Length: 324
Ligand SMILES: NC(=O)c1ccc[n+]([C@@H]2O[C@H](COP(=O)([O-])OP(=O)(O)OC[C@H]3O[C@@H](n4cnc5c(N)ncnc54)[C@H](OP(=O)(O)O)[C@@H]3O)[C@@H](O)[C@H]2O)c1
Image 1 (cartoon, rainbow, N blue to C red):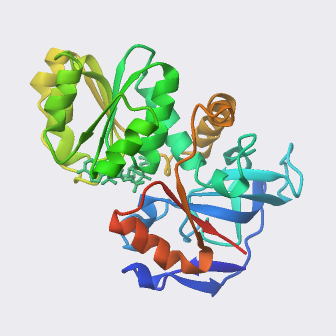
Image 2 (image 1 turned 90 degrees about the horizontal axis):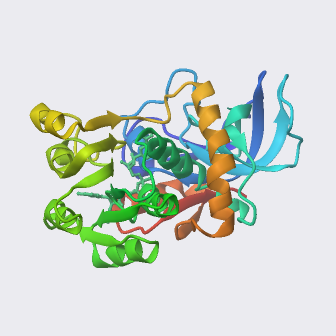
């Protein structure tokens, strides 16, 4: 099969289309013939050599895809060749075929184009599992950083569907407009004093749940903004990994700081998350309560261009690599 490989870490030009052996479905696995693969920020880090795949995972890039079932391994039930599907991967999506544990394969949401569906499972699984961890409920205030990104735009809509009031941060004016268009009650530029504006929006009470992509650089401001009993979930380290945590503030507020990654979780946990997505998130996508982000489709062979576009920061929404 054809796949995107890299000989050594580096800039986007290291990504090249190569012929590699087609994987075979082992026991409990499914072989998916890929139609499209989502491009994620973590793929950029892996290309640069900063985010190696977890043990046992494909060395190829690509953490999500859509396609059709090509074959099933021993012990797999409920799937037949030719059925459309999406898959949450630990790697291997930048290719024509990929094998994946059966529990991480689910039907695409009803009424959603199969190419578009490729960009939904990683954000759906990340957002729903983390907002569940943070116990976000109706009537609470929720803030997501990077509200116009793949994760952010999904999080705004999902939190709205749970009944939360939503604050989003973003950079440029068009991205702030986009946050409003998908349901943010307040969108503030992260180039301004976003914490003060968010605090004012809550009349000084603070934010109940924050979903953070920045890590170290926002840790103090995020904790400072939390309400009494507030929960901060860190899912990205775009602002570094070592920050200052004021435990006194945390104690006074009886607040919590949590951090998670999806990729390295064991298969049973990912299986449970995928089941939850199929049951509770896909109906929201099918009904239009959550709309897929605007998308840019790029042929698999031009993965280097896709990475350069994501790296530029100019892109709005999701980039999808399309096979064939
Ligand atoms: N832990 C996990 O399991 C997991 C899973 C998936 C993703 N993630 C992480 O989640 C983050 C978002 O992923 P994504 O796929 O949505 O990436 P993306 O589409 O590239 O979005 C990145 C976002 O970062 C925002 N940003 C840039 N500088 C910022 C700043 N100073 N303050 C606040 N926001 C800033 C961008 O906003 P502008 O475009 O407006 O500049 C953009 O919305 C990434 O860090 C990714 O690694 C984690």
